[in-house]
Image 1: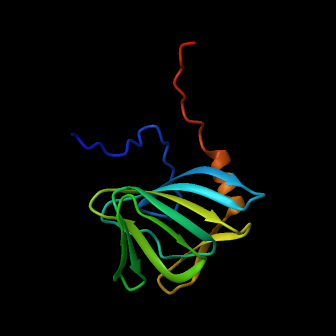
Image 2 (image 1 turned 45 degrees about the horizontal axis):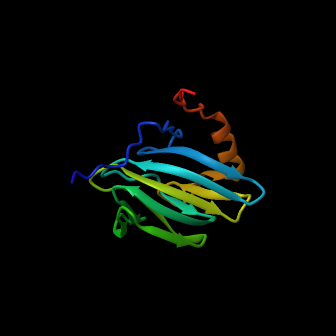
Length: 152
């Protein structure tokens, strides 16, 4: 039996200026329920900017493995394909990235209508924040995916 990988060819990936080695696609933003669902694609063998999570979140690794690193660069955790994690807001500042192949990870951020991610410089100074309404704007700015025409 041939094992197929996840096909992301119908997903339009976007990038945020200043956030290297990661792409995103906002799936949904529910302002009333305070939920932001996002797909992130982390480049293989790279790390994203140092950051903190300010919302409870769930992750599900769809492709590859998600590697999480301490601020000093030490590997803290590896989440293999198929793994699901639920964590509360907070925790230590960290970076993350893909393993030997690009990692595609579903993130469901919950419970805040304020800040979700705090992006940090090497001295732990805040350089940017992303909140629920920022993700709503990002989702609205996304191009509508091309839908196949189904004969009727």
